[in-house]
Amino acid sequence: MRSIWKGAISFGLVTIPVKLYSATEQKDVTFHQVHREDGGRIRYKRVCTQDGQEVPYADIAKGYELPTGEIVVLTDEDFEDLPLSTSRRIDVLQFAPAAQIDPIYFAKSYYLEPDAQGAKPYVLLRNALESSGQVAVVKVALRQRESLATLRVRDGVFVLETMLWPDEIRTPDFGFLEEDIEVRPQELQMAESLISTMESDFDPGEYHDTYREALQQVIEAKVAGKEVIPAREEEEAGPAVDLMAALRASVEAAKREREGGGAKPKKPAAKSADKPKDEEKAPAKRRPRKTA
View 1 (cartoon, rainbow, N blue to C red):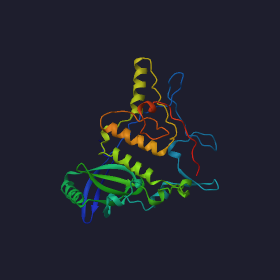
View 2 (view 1 turned 90 degrees about the horizontal axis):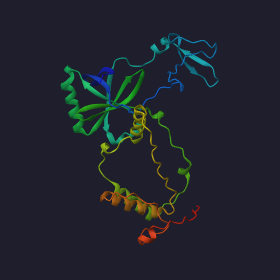
View 3 (view 1 turned 120 degrees about the vertical axis):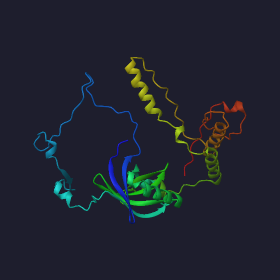
View 4 (view 1 turned 90 degrees about the vertical axis):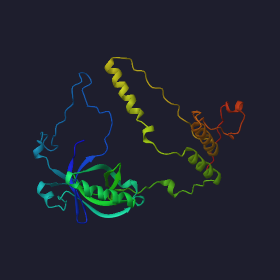
């Protein structure tokens, strides 16, 4: 990994020089826009909409559009007077329980590595923070943007997680929140039973990007000149006929999966799941939905 920023953690009177690295990377399959006929790369030109002329990058400025459609042009000198810290410091503002910070605030994660002379204070703060069970709330300026962030410990390393500002979090405004939707106690109990049945320790290694893997296989097949066999489309499940039956079937399927049966959940029947096996094979008849 290559460091993308150098600075220091400022903790009281203690300064810890660190290097910053991106902690994550996207594994998307990347494409170029090309000419379908000959595969030539497509290039774009920066053209002014006023005179139609191509504009050199050195002549391009930042413009802010007003509601009237007028443009305010900002120069480099305008940005120089803004109160953006250039001290390259990660200032610790406070310590707080991690549970008090909603994950929706987190934007991007970075690793922090200490310089040689900062290893001891780095380990000291790391151990103290880890034993406290809290996270440090900090402020940092990265890429011409000031952000709140948190410092926490993962695998013995500080992780800096930049955060969105409160006014960048949208308020959910959906119609169903104003509706009086009744949930029966039996339905709630069955849903809780389903959650309990499917509960297990999270292991991210159990999951993988099946779409990216399939796309890579298509590309490799084209390179090798082989015939590509289209993937089978899974049958879409229809709307649940009976919520209780659907939940009960999901609980039973989850139990079979945990016991090693590996059976896939079937579509819920219109009646109780406690039916003879020969009746389970018969297609379920749909009943009209009940209106509120």
